[in-house]
Length: 486
Image: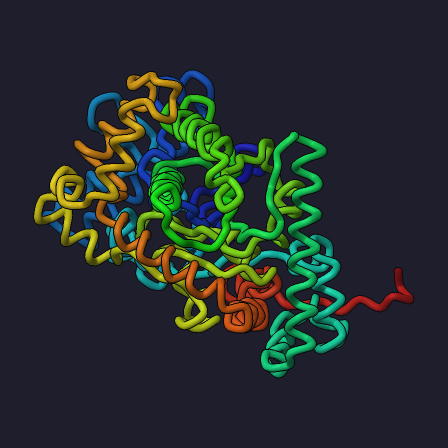
């Protein structure tokens, strides 16, 4: 708007028409802390002309809101581009909605929740503006490049066109009962696990056990992603093994980064290391349970991890994850998912089949009901002996070299507030992990499920996602270019 009005001398109406027809808003989060707002004084000092334009956009927009919803002053205040409560702030998500011709989330459940929650007022005013484009990932990078052994095996069956048409992977289903092919599928996974173990040993001095199940959670560290739920399972499993219990050997692998100012996320990383220090040193059980945190997670390093994973941890609180793409990358490489009905997990489960997905946890509706009734994590803690023991060991300092104060903030948060309902989902998660262990021991069944995850992952190619943007949002068509002209 500033360029068109100031530099090109256009009148407001045609400039606004061009702007809104040009802009589309893809929302990537439901979390309030990630929906940016900017202090008005700062905005005025740094970008005074931009603020003038924003205020004029707001004046005209609120006039339209009042026309649509007469006498609804609360709605006008909610939809304003300026938050008037306390220090005045510019609401960037509201501005993006107003200034775009299309608004989309990045998974169907996310797009639905956007319309029901944070952008409800805008969706009610302009419902045709809202749509969904589920995320996708590149099969060229995350399968062809990252997992050449599996890529070669796939090409033998479906030909070499699958990287540009991922739905061709469906032809793998014909091989699910081919014993020789299934063994070769397992050999590729074993080779990838050995390669990751060699890298971890060489680069970081971390010992992974390739002959165990690789149970992997690599993603940004955040309370809603619930890495600490995974840790509590690790503690419970450790105690189960110490008592002489039975479970398939497992290496639990973490990776991820915390935001610089996010103290709790950093404390979760410390907790992972504290539990690993104890578990990995225990000679009674460390041939059956290891915990590792692989440092410096980035896309390049993650490409070593996705092909080696047996189990993909997608355990965020339902309704919190916009979509996720790691869930797609793991499944594309034949990992089985343990997860909640959150983000793209919902659609992955629909595609690969409920019987090939380890589901646990409360749904969005069930969470809303729990919160409405008054959620009391302390009651769950009191009634669940395994949760009580795991949190008790952490609180007592067993994983902090005897310092009971180190992880007290995590324990206190879980027992007093538990904003991401970890306690509510704990038993369901443990029960589901027990099912994972049972199936993992059935080599033939696990391999079949692994193959079907890869075979049915075609929807989650970035090619499909970009095609949907082209058709439904950008309104652009393919242009054929002759190689002779280049």
